[in-house]
Structures are given as structure tokens and as C-alpha cells.
Image 1 (tube, rainbow, N blue to C red):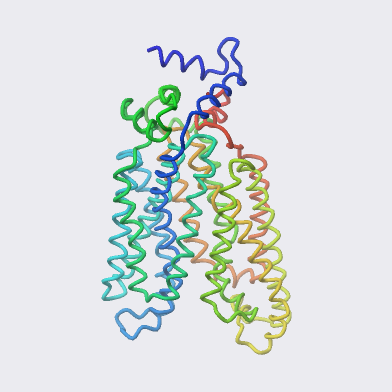
Image 2 (spheres, rainbow, N blue to C red):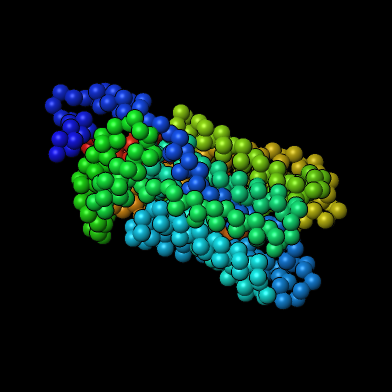
Length: 500
């Protein structure tokens, strides 16, 4: 086929006298004819999933205070039940990661995204209609399941649709919409009770299912199924009428053919497979070990110590900081690069968690606790003045930490996960990463108080600081820069060959 022969000539950087400079000029010529309007539209529709995911994560914050004091004894939560109401989402999400890995290979990216809106809607419907605590739990597990599928499918869908010039920005929109969802549910919680809040939370996944009917499947998946005509139609929709989409279609097809068919366990011996998998898994472990859940756990108490009495509004302020700086990260992602933002983010979090440890250490010296988790007992008059004097340190540390996390370790692990895996293991490897992330989130959430008792508050946050330092070293040593590279070029980096 002439098109394929031409594509091989253009895409093979080692062929004859052609060098990478000539290849890049071909890519630039192609991208200059691309129109991104429909790509942005498809991205906006798909990130309704992460927004729903953010609603699920944020829902427990305004709902738990109401459910612990509700007059109906069948729905009233005690302290242990409230803890499970908040954390059981991570159990569903871990299962959703495994389910999503199977779904994207079996049904494709588009249908998986449409299907995952169903447990979102059913879960919130179960919460709305709840007559007892177990119905609340089932609703949270279902919405967690949908969140796990979403956290896998949407990054893959965007990375396979987007071209290299905007893939970082569009991929970062996943985390941006998650934090917008969290902030949105905090804001709505100021005015709505827990049932009406659940009704509002079911709107984005309903829109997702309807709007995705009009969006294309990714060209990568269509070509892997031998559907070249449909892949060309999808590319024509995404790239505009003027782009010579046969060039990109042939490039993707060439890479798919070179890889072979399906993933087998023996493929794990290949450095082009096990290296990206190990990097993806370690990124997810380090993201949860930064201490983000601990900081969010303490946010309300820290604001109270600073004499900020409106704790609900304080949560909105924390959410707003996340939204602003995740938005900044999205805007600069394709200019600054992933690696430098991860390093800056890790350094900022290491400094801030070290400062948090100093804060807790100084507070405990002024007010020796009987248990590790009591160092934040703001009701104690004996420690009130030292707490107030040191509140600025806690506030400053929290602001630096949340800013640092939003700039790098919040959005980038999910973005890199969607970029570095070879096509044939993309579903399986992404499932392993999502399972790792949510399992670590559950582990940290449920063992946090035990860590506080065992290590003390200061020791726990210094442990987080050491993990942030370790993630900086890991990033420098092992994480490749993916800015401006096609998915095929990134794959070639791990194979140790010249990529297209």
C-alpha cells in the first residue's frame, strides 16, 4: 500500500539519509494543519467522568456531619460508621481499576466510559433513597467502583486522542476536573442537604453517558481491531478536515503491527514492558505516600487553630487552591515538561511536610499529648496559646504543600500512566497502577491514626518528608521526559530504539 510505504519512509528515523530533524519537520507540517476544536470538545465530554469522581471524593465531607446528627436512627452514623462511609469508596475504586483494565480491552475506551456512568448514577440513587446505613455503604461502593474505572479509562482516552503538542495540557485536565468536582461539592454542601447534594452529584455522569454517544472511539483502539476506515473517520473528526490524517493513521498502525498481538506473561522479561510498568507503579505509591490524605485530614483543625471559625468555608479555600494550581500545571505542562514539575513539586512537599513535623514537635513540647493523635486537641486550654502562636507555620506549610501537590504529584502520575505503556499492555498495566493507587489510599487512610500513635505526629510527617525526598530522587533517576513526544516515540525510548 503506497500510504504505508510512505509512512514507513517518514517514520523510520534510521532509514537511509533521513534524520530526526527531517522527521520532525514532517510532524510539524502535519500538526500545522490540525484543528483542535473537536479534540477539545471530546476531552471536555470525557472529563465529566473525573468531575463525577471529584464529587464522590468530596461528598463525604459535607454529608458526614449531617449523617452523624440526623434524627432518623436508621441512618445515623457513629464514629466508626462515618469512617467507613468516607473510606469504603477506595475499596470500590480499587476493584474498579481491575474492572476498567478488562473493560478497555474488551469494549474499548468509549464504551467503557459510557458504562462507568451507570454505577455513578445507581450509586447516588441508592444514597438518595437510603433507608438504612447499608444502603449508604452500597451507594458509596458503587460510586467508588465507577471512580476506579474512570481514573483508568479517561487518561487513556485522552492520551490516545490527543497529539503530542497538547497531550500534557489535556491530560492534566483529568486531575483539574477532579479538584473542581471536590470544590464544587464543598460549595454546594454549604447550601444543600445530603440528599439534594447526591441528586446534584448524579447530573455530570448522566451528561457523560448522553454526550459520549456523539464522541469517537480512539484511533489506537480502532486500528488494533482492524477497523482502519473507522479510525480514519475518528482522526478526521479529531484533527479537522485539512489534516492529512492518513499519515498519522499509518504511523499508529505501523506501531501496532510492530508490537504484535496480545500481552503474555513472558512479555514481562522485555525492558520495554517491565520498565514502564515499574515506573507507573512507583509513581502511584509515591503519590499516596506524600501525605496528601493526612494534610487534608488535618486541614479543618489547622484552620480552627488559626482562629478561622468557618471550617466549611476553609474547605472551600483549600479546594480553590487545588483548582488554581492544578490549572496552572495544565497550562504549563507542555512547556515546562513533566519531569521538572515533578521535581519542583516533590521538593516543595518535602520542605512543607518537614515544617509540619517541626510544628507538631513544638506543639507537643508545649502540650505533651497522651496519644499521638491528640496533639491537635484544640479544646485544651493548656496548649491554646502555643498553638495560636504556631498556627502561621501550619497554615504556611499546608499552603505550600497543597500548591506543590497540585503542580506536580497530583496530575502528573495519572498523565504519565497514560503515556508510557506499550499499546498491548496499556489496559493491564493501567489496571495494576490504579489498583496500586487506590490500595495505598485505603491503607494510608485506615492506618493513619496507628502511625500517629506509633511514630507521633512529628515522626509521621517526617516520614512523609522522607518519602517526598525519595520521590524526587526516583524522578531524577528513572522517570523519562515525555513532553513533545508521540506515544510511539515514548515506547521506543523504553525499547532502546529510535522511535517514530
